[in-house]
Image (cartoon, rainbow, N blue to C red; front, side, top):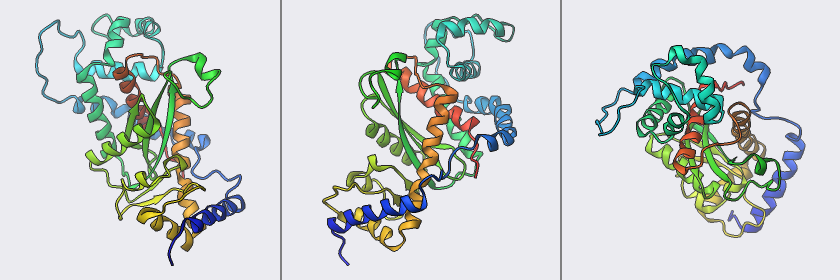
Length: 317
């Protein structure tokens, strides 16, 4: 049977009806905080291993450059940076807070030193290595979901007049999450659009050798251009928009899957809820504001949130 745009529109209406009958009021793959409390030991184990991971990630050849040497070595700077991101305070507040840790630090740390950590190329390289090492210690699968989110640079803009989170005071992050463990396997940042962040996350996954057997995405990514990013070996769970006109091979494959098992398709599609829950919990735990102003530093802050997520997030089934 040939799949036409009319059939596609009818299928979207059928899916809406099935969703209302079977899934309304249900929270699929939602984040269960009560169960998380029972699993905190796994988080403690990750945090206990963190210094070891950072030391291993920092085992890289560093070319000496002219200028004043750093008061803290690379491992210390990376650990300090992660602590700063976890606290999510202003640089001046962190400068004061670090007075409490002065006996543990080798050197005086000023608010300017803290800000420079966000653009420290050596620290950024260690963070990338750390992200990979954390994934290697988990049994991540090749079944993924994805979600994009916006971060505010202004408290006023977050609360007031821009509910759609658009404009120069918002930056965009897209993260690919492993459905088995709840860990992020790739992330992308953009100052332009959520779609640009999505493309960067897909590129990171490919460059890192992450295989994708299935992926669940929301309707924002419902386009032929997005489908073309995935081969025949990837099952894409995304619902077409109601005004769909051109089908093509990608949409034809998805629509036939919907025809054969609409309820089963929706079960896999709603697994993207885990990504939405992850983004929500990240903002509650690590902050919904990025305090940096330079674009490269904003990107580093956003990437660090993905690392902190992988340290603290527990997949409750």
